[in-house]
Length: 342
Image 1 (spheres, helix red, strand yellow):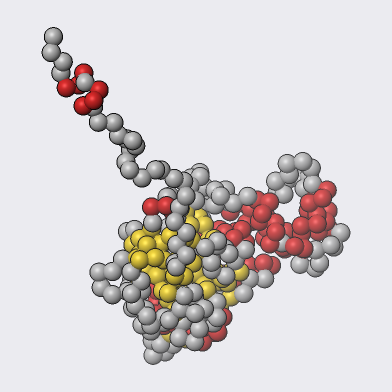
Image 2: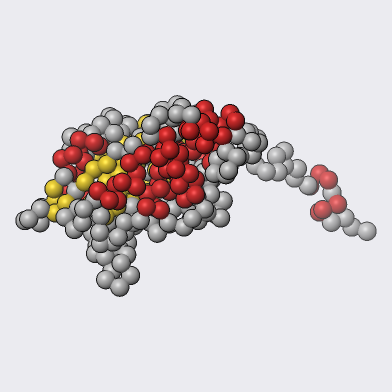
């Protein structure tokens, strides 16, 4: 019987490494020559980055377009992230760099789609101030959204500020009274007799030297304010629907913009909801240092919004000062905002 070529071991080629000539390794490239940069835009898997950091980046420079390196896996990259780049960082048309590292974030502002959605969505990284923008009228202001934004800010360790627009249409004082006990700073803008936007100097002074993220419903004048603060921004603006009383989405993605006198503004798309499924109620109390000591007498598992809560006795004894009762009610209102749609 003749032997076929497969029966002759001398004619069988044995591959030393069936998966290839290079041995597999868990070591990853160190990218020692990676260049630091700051993410200022995100668009469908492409990241606009300015070389340097927010404090050192040239705002007039053309952003370097980059993509995530494979070794980053599912790690998210958002506006505000400090990253390191390799590849073509010239910023010339058609060039593409790679993001190989995301530097540890100093703060993360998150939200979920709703209160039952466990998936967190990072809005911006490394911001130190949250400006909650709302109109005094047209559309009517809603305390629910501001409460929720305040919860998210306190949870992230970001300082909040309320920015009221369209104060020429109504008196902002009654609405601001809802937040008096929280001692949240506020700014007010209005249209002047000639249609000019007044109050921007105060807003600009508050933002100078800081990284501030703007959040608010559509139609409240957020993009109009950004255009006044950053004349080169050219952010699209819209109007309020006469039937629904809600604004139309104009900004479609977040973008970081440099202020002429220093500091950065992160303009975000208008939001319909601000879920807080990711927020632990105990972390919220960290923002109320005058109340925190009262939890020592709380029963196990206390929600801090029930008859046996130790905070009531703490406030009644005057440990939280004259504003204690109002502060406690405000704290509990913020707690309830996690369970009540805005």
